[in-house]
Length: 195
Length: 288
Image (cartoon, rainbow over the protein chains, first blue to last red):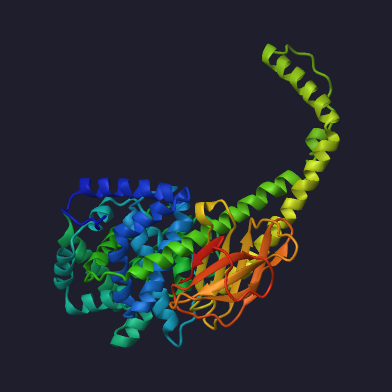
């Protein structure tokens, strides 16, 4: 099955997510075929995110495998909550990739983390479900519409795996300014992408 | 400013501090302690934190901006092998739980032990019928006491065997978790024969745990084999057999290429240099 991309439509997002939840239900029941289906649906996007963050194909493979295994093991727990399966799955991929990048750094000291992405990514935000179904061009355009420093801060955090303090150090910017740039940048993207 | 309802540890964040950290939180740009502190606050704060959903939704859109790259086909094989091994582990754990429940004595709770004063009240017909059935069951159980005892002994024996297998599987999973290890799910044709798990570490050491092995006679042994790209089976050694059809083997000197095949045959005696029959259980070792 190909990865769902499509028009900016809540209906499309909802239909996709209903299908995803049905697959996740079967995964929770221990059906390997269902994991196969979920993997086929999101493998390319998951691998692309992991590769973009780790810049290492082998590490990206490990990240994707870990993320899907996490989904396999925690499907039942996820089903108790709400929100987009795709958002949840890709958030796991993102967290795993960030962890992998930070562990690779010589100064990294990271404890084991659970599968749960930040609470925010599990909140039943209708806009988040729509946003997860945007096409890449629209999101890149929204990123391009930001100021250089806003885009830099967001990309260093999301794709570079840097903490806000590390971004402040690396860019020689006060911490408060970094926080402000990330927040204003995300809000600006939201305005551009809103239906 | 709104404080959380319950007192929190000294590091606890206020509502406004969490609002201030929201963008960094949804971008995963806080250190682990800070992430935990925000999560703790969100779990206890009674005030809404709309900014989290507001900003978090944009972050989920960022994921789709990356250039698409197809993963290699081998990644799916690794994932499915690892998930199959995980499923096998769950089934073993479930088997042990059932057997433990069967073998455990029924506890007498204080509530059951307390004598209650007789209370006369109408007894519905259904309850009365169930009462008679219970009396019949108790009489029958008394007559079958020896049989139950025997069944309990068997259940305890099965539990011990399942636990032995579980320990061996745990040893295999330990090896499987080492970096660069290969894992294989051993299956029989048709799925009714011996099954198990195997792991090959990056230094060429294998651990194989099997169950449902039929009893051997005389000098018969279960021999494990590794088959690399040249297609020639190389003997790894005999499985050490335990009661209940459980077997385990540790061996060294294996090739470490993903895709090597592990196989099990039943041989008339030890020391076989080539299989004398078709494998009774086979698994492909893949990385992951």
